Length: 114
Image (cartoon, rainbow, N blue to C red; front, top):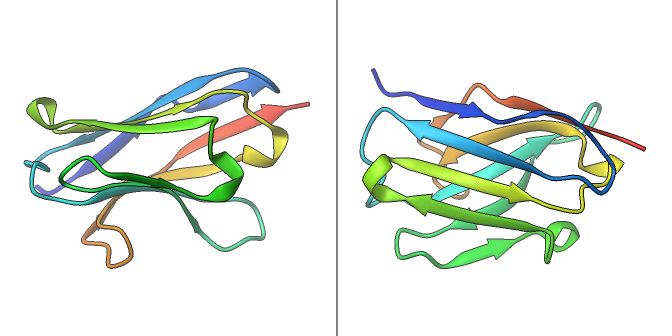
């Protein structure tokens, strides 16, 4: 079964850190991968992207605070989130693809309290 499973979300105070993981049930070595998020009442937005070759790109609001990484040997992608802000509160989704998405994870809630 083709599956992406996120973990690592939770409640954290502003200024804190969380590390999200996305475990794939299949090889992701040749895939571009991304993290999206959706806050209440807002559209889902692309947060960070990592190419099959390891190139990365971030939305402006998280640059310098978030780091996307991948471990192809473990078929796992990560999102290290530092200096979290209340506006980072959202459901975070792992995605196979960048804009054309092949598979989505179920999402993990990240809540940042002020």
